Length: 376
Image 1 (cartoon, rainbow, N blue to C red):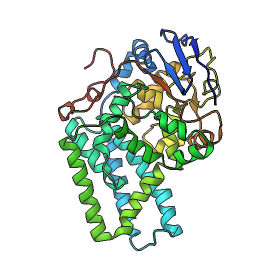
Image 2: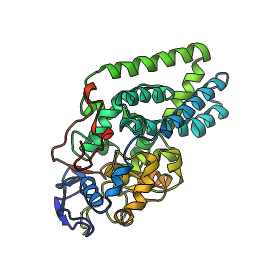
Image 3: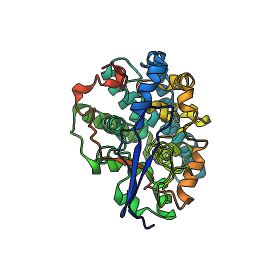
Image 4: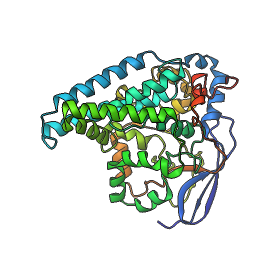
């Protein structure tokens, strides 16, 4: 769809004292470019000023480790029980999609919680427990996920740093219904491979431990339960990041899909283009409340059990923000709406920074009150 150079200045919400936002679209680049800082820092300061009690919600959630232990156990039991079931049988595929994908999506998001040091007080305990939560996923990724994800928080939308953003190459070649369907079906591979294409992480001891622990588990499972048990875990991970209701959060979190601010030939809204969208539906019960995504980005040091409390305390800041009602509908709209696609992301050029690179950063700010003014 041809675009002309358009620059629109949009007014900020009256609730927050933030500068006007300038958004540009250029020929050959259909992304939405913003020239202001990301909105979460501004809203975080405003919420703390109005509701200082929210800072007491920060800190680890002890329940997380028990849920992880239970889900890991369920997946291992299921894998062993299916060791004699043909891989392409209806029973096997349904088990991998209904039970396995839901469980592994849960573990993806457990690792997300743990990456913010929200399972234990000790940072090293969180790093090691993330490796344990990784086990049923079948491939090692928890150690690499953490620095990429923390950089996503510190550099939201920053081109070349935020690896959650699709590349121009992806957006160009997948700019069709079939292309978007392909992306949604195989998005787990895009999220796994894209970060390495954007920038490389140094190989640290925790990365090596993650790889060795995962390959050792896979080998033991293969030796004692056979290839079908291991295939169940791999298939579960694939379905978890494919056309599965819980996988809708990948798109729902930051793609601009709502009619008032979607990608179009011109940006003409008088309302700042939102960059993060929450979801308040029942699937949050299976996904560590990741649907409360504005709340999470505003306060990444608040664990999943206390995000609803944050929402209630600061409801005056969240009530008017656009949000999704269904992750399944998000996938459907993303694929079939011709005005929606991988271009529908807000990008910025402002300087960001990479975090979580070094092993001696185990005591990162997420453990000590990330993003809270006056707290290191």
